[in-house]
Image 1 (tube, rainbow, N blue to C red):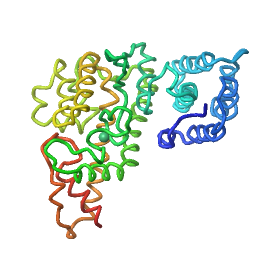
Image 2 (image 1 turned 90 degrees about the vertical axis):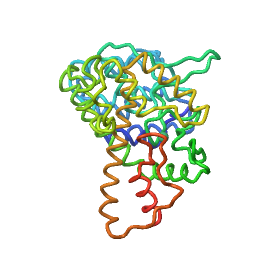
Image 3 (image 1 turned 60 degrees about the vertical axis):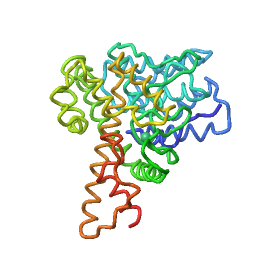
Length: 351
Ligand SMILES: [Zn+2]
């Protein structure tokens, strides 16, 4: 089996040399089955040069090489990272983990990550020895993954798809008469995707570096107490979006209020509504797991602010009429349909 990774996924690496190595491996195995022996050889060829020579022995696995031995390399690098702070080595470890998991479909278990912030999140939980309850099994044997995200935002995608109910171009939300607004949300999301990924990555890099430099002591993950102060400091735009609700926000209702803000099932098509409810219930039970959603949502709003800033400059004195079909609706306080966003999208579209 080749290496099943989207180009976009590879591009999310902070260190270009790791992305380039993964690219090379990706091309190398395009049409061949990846055996554990081949995987190790490629790791040694492309990723080993990125590891300090004194740690190369980690890659010398005994024969026969098995997938479990490849996994052992990840564990040993994880152990090493517990002692030294090396963000590049951190990403090399993630790359090896991806080679382990994504050379088969569905991915090999041990990891359920689909986006890099989830991989980092799981890794930080691992370093803090926090167990993660990452999958929801339904009665009929189906699984829902709370770490699956729409590629354009922080919401859960439709089953088997890459886009959520807000971004699927042919899915009108409640109260919308046709698909025009949905198509506009989709286009706007695609247009800002590069900037969105970068915004998330900036927060991620900052926090992961802080976590490592502080030898795992900084409160980078969602705390059990003092959640309001944590959100205000680390997710300031989400905190701002809470508006007056900040007053009643406390450790007991924090996750509920954040989910109401970001992941409300109201106004969604029935099949999306059911999955949102399941995910929200799971996050209520395991509050820590809301972290990847929060980092994506904060990144999305940062990116949206930057985009608005750019449009603000461009638009002065050159306003185009707003298209009535893309007027804001009242489905959620933070969809792409915020007044400025909708106007900007239309203006930009016809400029
Ligand atoms: Zn979305």
